[in-house]
Amino acid sequence: MYISHESPISFLEESRSYNDYDYALVHLFETHPEYYNFFKNSIKMGRQVLLDNSIFELGEAFDPDKFATYAKELKPSFYIVPDVLEDGYATMESFQSFTAKYPDLPGLKIGAVQGKTYDEIVDCYRYMSDFADYIAISFDFSYYLVTGRGKTKLERWGDGRRRLIEQLKSDGVWNKNKPHHLLGCSLAKEFKHYVGDRSIRSVDTSNPVVAGIKELRYNGDLGLQEKPSIMLADLIDHDVTDSQKEDILYNTEQFKEIVGYGY
Image (tube, rainbow, N blue to C red; front, side, top):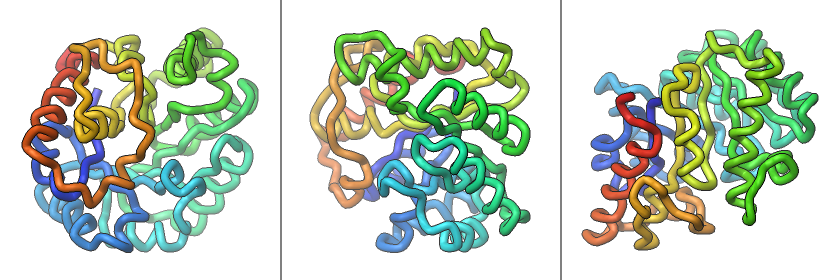
């Protein structure tokens, strides 16, 4: 499983030491040219770059036309086609219209699965299985709060995504021949369940980095039972201190242990 942890600008160069690929939040390109230039340089270096439409940070996908312009300029390895939070049918419509308008963007098309019910999620999944190059599944569906087990919302989110993936497999919906990306995480321990699953190709989460900035250390390969309530995008200008650097590097190493890095 390839890993990327979004990091503050002050730590981006260092992040290449613990990231397998670089994860770009498109909305930050407009306000932070040095952030954009980092990813341009990554492409020149031959590193893989995933361009995200920033829906988690903005509440809705970044303007599709501007997104397409940045994709043309950056030439990412992958990009997440603009989607609609928890609306599978609107997400399918968005995917169809965007790819019809911009059929020749560089990079593989990642289709994010959305939906509020299992049937809706399945419909969206099957569509992405047919038309996307890569399938992404988010960590925080409200659906998981109903299906997931645990005492906290974080536990139910993590268990809920695991159960969804298992159900998609048991129902014969899961396409093992297509790569999957896991968007974000609630608790890092969730990823223990995917060790050895070659169809889950990649994950992104700022969890180990944000925790380190908040001076929280993972409990070994158990991770944390809590999650800092701030997004990495809101810490993009943070200057990482020496002690925070130590915590970040420790947490990212433990995350690799959790996902069975190198399995």
